[in-house]
Amino acid sequence: MSTLSRDSWWLASLGRTVVWARLRELEAGTAEVFDSDGATLPYDSVDTARAALLDAEFVEYDGLDEEDALARGFSLRELQPPQAQDDTALRNLMVSALGARA
Image (tube, rainbow, N blue to C red; front, top):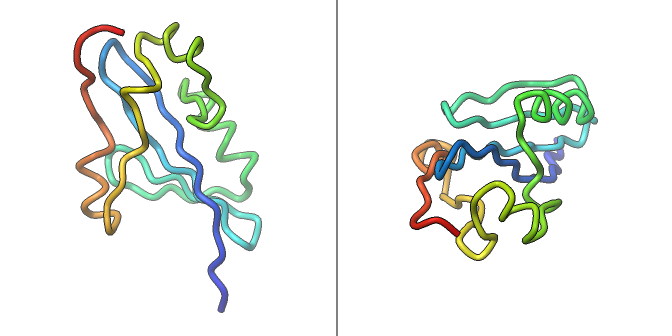
């Protein structure tokens, strides 16, 4: 069984706190969102998963430009999606506090 997938990173901000979510598009056309609580939420389609993230006021990281980031109170230079060897380690990195105001 092939498990091809494509990940995209989404973020929401509250003050100087950034909350991440990873949207994983699966080969079957379904999707999973790994959230800041460490839960993996299944969705019947990528569009449904995107809509749920947008409803929760997340934005796609790759869609942000510096002006958008500054409007949210941070600079893209101080932000990058978390990385870890597995989802267990990743869970601890899904919420981060930023330094001084951009």
